[in-house]
Image (cartoon, rainbow, N blue to C red):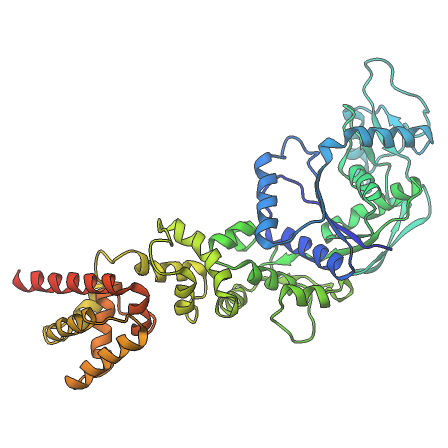
Length: 470
């Protein structure tokens, strides 16, 4: 059997973190078993589905690198197929027309609730055995078995048993002929030959209904794995404020996709004590049988830790490609300055996010327009200005602009003036970066280039002279 999984979001909003985890698990299971991963857009809710939401889902999948083998398929383009299967069920007596009015159904529900019964359709039209007259409205209901049970051998939850007597006759087509969610899912899973359905456990109660329809169509149901919900860091249901944000918001906050994937896979799955997983390792090790049956909680500090790990250890060109987008948000063209991967190399040890790194990298591409007041006052003293002037002349005379040559000049001057390296490096940082924090000073100056360094030292000296004369 060829494994085939699917991710089937409804395009009523962005791709949130819970949906992304479901997509990841489905993707990994298919990849591990040499199968196929299908993307299906369940857009039958025409009032809430939007093109913008579809694009948000596709953008999120692309950013995470979750490549699908088939799709995206859109349910709204399969209505003819759904009508065909509905007619098949009607012809075989496995579905029937229901003419009950909204008023009757509302009254039935009120009476059942008054008797403290579970609200459910009473089968009023089940044995009418007639079709609608011209202009007469009717829905189509699936003729659910009246007795027996549905056993779901869930790969996460274990064996879950549902009594058919508790399941009413589900509407599979509305009065206007449009199919309902539980029916379209069944037809799609059947036609696309889905073997494993990995989805949130909020769908568990739909599963016995879907299994009964599949069996009525003569199809063996897929294997189900219902994944527990994700809770916030306080153990409460995830809300947008507490982490249920769009996947693309994690990009905006400066996270690498690899860090988000690594974080997601561990929200409910583990392999011993291992914390860091490359995508290849996830594919090799992931199994739905190892998914925890208890809910997982968000841990923002762990995500930051993972992100810092990937910033430090990922290929510099890869990090630079993602950093470039953040530089653009700051109005900076990375082409107008040092190679971005070299800047990544210089800054990777400290940055926890690409937003932090972009801010730290700004001075490599834009000369500071002002100086940090505290750093300037502390490091740019009357005594150090002659030293900076001397260093400026020595740096101007360099014919080879390398970190080693720059370091040699700074070190020699420090020894001549009996100063610690920091006494020169710190005011130099203020001159070139506007602050007293940067990568090692020789690396910083080499990346900036000789022309920029000399220009920025000149600007500081002029600023100091102007300030001193005022």
